[in-house]
Amino acid sequence: MAPPVDFEPTGPALEVARAALARGLCDECYGRLFGRLGRGLTNPQRTERLVAALGGERPPPQVPCPVCGDSFARLDVWVDRARRAAEGREWHRFTCGSRWDPERLAAEEALWAELRTEWGESARAAFNREWGKRLGAATGAEGGPDRPDVVFLGDLPVGRVEVTVLSLYVRGRYRKLDRTLPQTRWPCRRCQGRGCVTCGGTGKTYPTSVEELVAAPFVAATAAEGTRFHGMGREDIDARMLGRGRPFVLELLRPVHRTVDLAALAAAVAPTSDGRVEVVDVRASDAQEVVRVKEAAPEKSYRVGVLGAAEVGKVNEALDLATARAIAQRTPTRVAHRRSDRVRTRRVVTARLVDASDGRFTLDLRTEAGTYVKEWVEGDGGRTEPSLASLVGVPLKVEYLDVLAIHDPEE
Image (tube, rainbow, N blue to C red; front, side, top):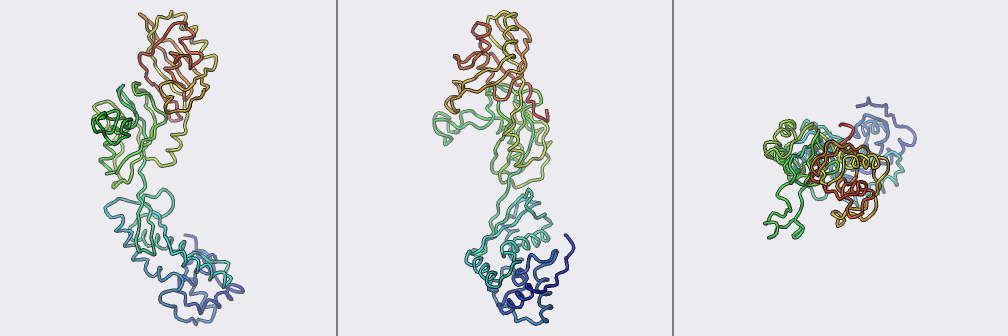
């Protein structure tokens, strides 16, 4: 805390202080009339100096205070209410807010206007600060607006504290080794997640997902009420995610416990998912990183198995042509029901023929973000131009697709 600044009221400030003597204000509210004068002082300390400057005499305050209703005298009660509201939960950082009767706040502003004070601090701001100071002293937790674990809202007219438990965020990378897993929970299209005969009452199109398998150990350890999964893009359900894996942020909603061994929980994903998913490079994260992950547009590398009777020379020639020019991809048929129908320009950055035999060949590709690789190979009925199939002059079919790398800055 900064050292106190001398506060010796003179001139206009002293005239305001004299006019306010008869208002019956409590020490907190009287001092708040000058809350912007001096630094490192409490409002009762300001009151003490003001009264001394006026000769040391002051009429006794009214009970309750006509401005705050003695809310500042009950700060310890609000500390106890906050502790009980968050009982059973782990929290180390917090912030405080309050809800006041609008008429009381309006009356305070009217008093300021009448007294012509230019230095007033609002009752709400002062209450939030003083409440936070006492709550921090009572619990050892750190108050402030930066990345709190919980937010306490004191409803003064009702006499109740509402607590908002903020999410816990975990950043990592996942490797998906199963060609039957969607990235996130996929609600049943027929019942929209409610459960029906089609989905066997599960509410899901697929039995599980990368999100659910990754989240399971973390939910168990934190007793979170739910999750949100934020991936840096997504691969097709039938594609594997190899290499160092795809970056993601797991958001754990309303966790009870916040101190957990992230590395141990990440290591538990592989055995609890029967080897279908692995998680590496985990660390604590925050809401801002969710935005960065979702907005990132890194290039990606793939290995693609292709079926088609194309000559090796023709394939190599087509790959040279493909990397020399942009491709125009109209929204693929398979996702047209959920994405806007428009043409997107993309590039295949590099392309290499790995091997070829018996009517099939393997490619290694690096593409711009958002490139539909299957459609680039097959053509999608002419919706991708040029496609590899059109360049080699024979029909092609993707046999399998693996994502080898997400070329984000960490990779």
